[in-house]
Length: 516
Image 1: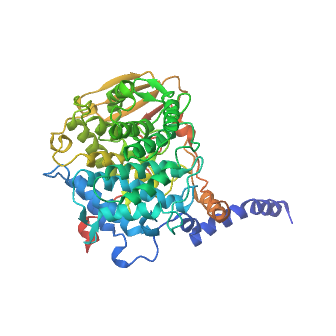
Image 2 (image 1 turned 90 degrees about the vertical axis):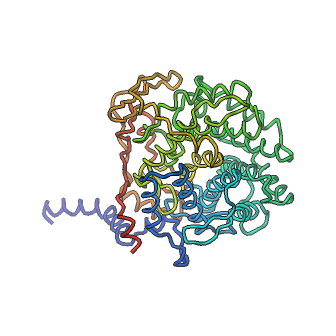
Image 3 (image 1 turned 45 degrees about the vertical axis):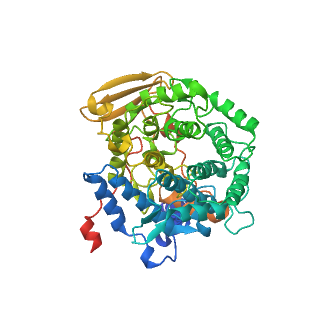
């Protein structure tokens, strides 16, 4: 064989495996099947219809006489999707999307646990216990909560969530289960025996090891719910977790997500959300220091929210619609004191975020998509599955906690800081400078002492997907890129030019076209 032939042969030997893998992925769709938890065998009447997505987007794009109208509609949208896809006696759901490293049972449990507080808040505020779903059927919301929690907390049952172990994702979801039970505790949803059985399961979280970060708040919340229900709870364990969490406080309302200086939007949708609930369940919890931290936090955080997106950075990016949560919490009066945020401003934040992201394709197929705009697996953490992004509903949970006659819904909207004028503020605790340009609507975080430029976002292309797909049956790991450098170490983060772009944003056909 001549030299040219030898070189051609060597090139072929180097390329045949990548080519074969890519071809396998493209021809058989193996990676799509491996990463899809879409329901199968559903009755045609309950299959998800594109008109539901198009209709929701149209709903948020037009004005309404009642402020809560599009939110009532989005509530029905999410509960319809959950109910359609519920399995295991209602304790889990099989949502469409890419799986997590935690496995299908955990992913399905997340779908229930992260939808249940939305339903509980709706009921707790006196809204109807039976709603008409998107298929025109009556949906009993009390039964939805009852069946899921009873099935999940009954040992030996076919739908049991199982005991809680150290570093277990169930610790996170148990906090939402506890929160759900607390909200409907006086509505006759559960019998005393069912409450006791659920409490026994929840107690399993109090003495388990947790990652040394915001997770310390979950056993605290679970313990406080148990106390409020008259169930035994280990006060020493609660105190130890909360003491460790308080060590992460860095001032100005900002907490590091663990030792050191780890700051991102978890302060909003994780930490301050839990602090709100702790004080709601156990009034005055944490005393004046926590109350003051919560008020200080929103005074700077409000500058990060605008009608043209948020300067997204950090992990769990698909929780992005939860960004207004601490502002809504701060709009609720506490102990007779005036709220830290005007209710009209809080609703403007809620409207700005949900309208922006729904228009960008952030809700589809009955769930928040797995990205910043649409689905973008490059930035989806490996611990996130199809139901994980339902944490985006946390802003809606707090909104629905306020009844329709509450100031959140009846006050006139107030403009956000970015809508009033340009600004530049320093947040020394996070070592950020936040700027807002009222002319363009851009909000930007500039990190002090950061190296110039932006680390690239590692791709999740066909070859890597194919390899991950083939490895999935054995290793059960999605092997998505971590992209931590891009998420945390850029010199700046912009709402106008997200570091990850707006991948997956979709144009939808007119509603009339899909209804034909």
